[in-house]
Length: 509
Image (cartoon, rainbow, N blue to C red; front, side):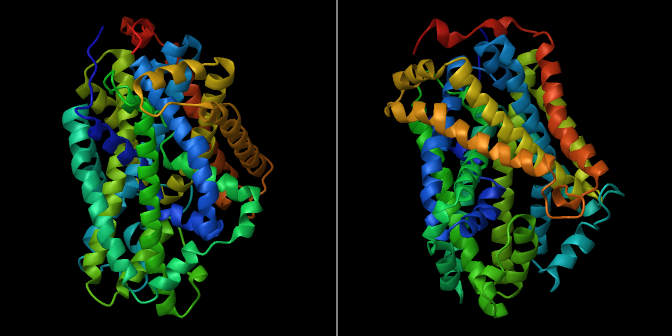
């Protein structure tokens, strides 16, 4: 049997798993989601979702990777030859995400340097769209934007350079630097943010509970959606990372640490973001709810506007904030890219370096599409469809197949309990058999209803108001295309006989 790379230490694995989970969404999505869905009261469904979907799914994927000792395609093939395509589906979803996620990190690198001179000026929105991105029209790529291409190249050089070093000397070593640095920087951001005038009003808006919202089913769906997307579930990431664990590994405890570590950072991000939003509201003379924003708008328009008004050292705060985005993005991009690197190595039996250059190089080339004048529109549409109809559908299919079709939960529970301090009980089984499939199914029903029946509030009825041609050519085509390519890859022959082996089936730990 082939020798498989392993993490050097348990702490190294946990930092890598937490680094994968902590990404841009923790900083620019979670605070707004919590605020819009009940403020402090949102933490009730959020915690419930963490314990009944997030951590149970993490444990399941950790167990699969640890038991079958392979990348996501190899893991699902060892589960059943018929399910190999699911592993490739997850890998290809990660591949698509990596092509545009890298571009957002490139923006953050640019803005880190812009912070030194506050180069974005007073009109931060016009600077982003006109001066920096040179935004064109949806459906027209236009020419390349050098200010985006150059940092994008830097992003890929860093990530692919780390991945060529391997699991222990590359990914683990990098995360041992990036994660402590990220936490340290963000703590500095929070300390400065809570001392700003108006911070108390911002925090009150963030934490003040609106318990009436808890009765709204959509709030619970939002909580499960945040947990599901935040923890890197169904991206093939956690299966890949756990396949590098040694035989004696506390699977359940690792999942709890990863889950709560990610949620702790989200809470920290919420405190920092709403403190500065409270400051902006006071400076602008408007209520906090008038300045709440998320996504690209929060990071690259609202935050530069806030930094402009800082009473002292605005440049320093700007550098800290955008550097935190860079670090959070890099740790996630490493994990996303590792999924298809590992899949290529296992399937085609080539060296890691060749797999990094092949898979990562192709992703880097495709990412240049988003570094064009029309790149933002392409990024927006692809991101929506690949997340909603890639990750979410894939997660539903994964849990239904394992819990209902192959009925593997009891076998996985025995495997996890054999190596873990925290023993799995009925809550884990019930969560995966009943709660998670029902919630994901409800989410899918709403998504397909909105998209197929065109319930969006705009002229075309499409997401973002895009034309039918652009919507189907970039959104649906990518979401459906990854599944088609996944099926094709699963039909190709393995270049190594390890595809038939399930090591842990022969020697129980």
